[in-house]
Image (tube, rainbow, N blue to C red):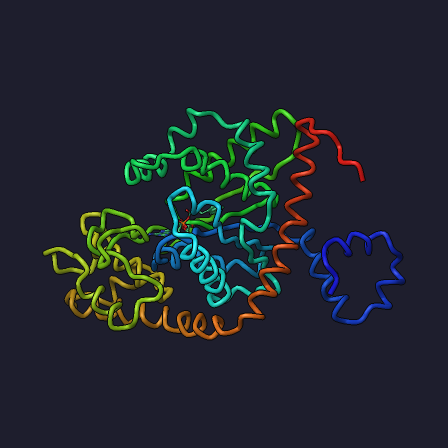
Length: 367
Ligand code: TYM
């Protein structure tokens, strides 16, 4: 199979060579050329903790929805994960499960570049350069840093502090146009844009300025137990989160236990945060608008509503869980994806990295 480097060599050959190739090679070449025609999408998830319904509805579901429209890079951001202490064996296993989950959710690995961040050294290299264009004051304002520093007071490492710069590097490395994320990542997107604009104002148009894509529903799924707090992998109360691998009975039990209020009406309003959150979950799972959900449950009690939410979540997660179980047995297939996609990602990452290195004054490589 032709890799990205061979494609470079191909570019310099005549058109005639192309027409002599077999169909499979032609298809590969067309795929590689397409990146020039489509806008670029980049996103990623950390392989830490058990993924929640929030990760799925706020991010992964939109990734699948957008994947035909864009040239997509979906990264398992394992380098971000070590800002918090990890058990190495557990991290390795979770990273693999996460990569498998991307595919199980419906991202075609032939069309979308699905890879591990640590396999593409450009992420860390660009992050170093961007560190030199980011101010301490900007990083000090990041709410996620403040939250994580409070949670892990015994390990407030420099990586935790400069985390948003690595995230900016992830995005800018691919000249990304759009970044689908949940609302909690909005501030990181803003700093990414600021860094890119600062760099461009000094060196010319080096980076594409990315936009966040935040879905209409599911952009911030809240804890089922404390609906004013985000549903989170690191929540100590397991009843607050629905995990993607929860079995059907557990899903239903957690939905039934979800905190609501004494109003007794299924209404989408801030005064009823628990009910509002369940409407958000139901909307994101079924595609119905909050107004349609209010109408569907008009005059009905919370018991009936919670049951419907549980069923909707079960229906959403079951196919995903089955597909992960199937793919986990396909070791050679997943290994092949990991290898080929890392090469492809590295090729595009290096294009930007070399340009940036030249701009800042690093000496040219001798070929
Ligand atoms: P992470 O791993 O915490 O979360 C992955 C994605 O899930 C979204 N999300 C949620 N959406 C709705 N409701 C929730 N309760 C909820 N919890 C999480 C997040 O917004 C995110 O989109 N820093 C990032 C990972 C990252 C990244 C990147 C993302 C690193 N580099 C470059 C985009 C582009 C993070 O920690 O996400």
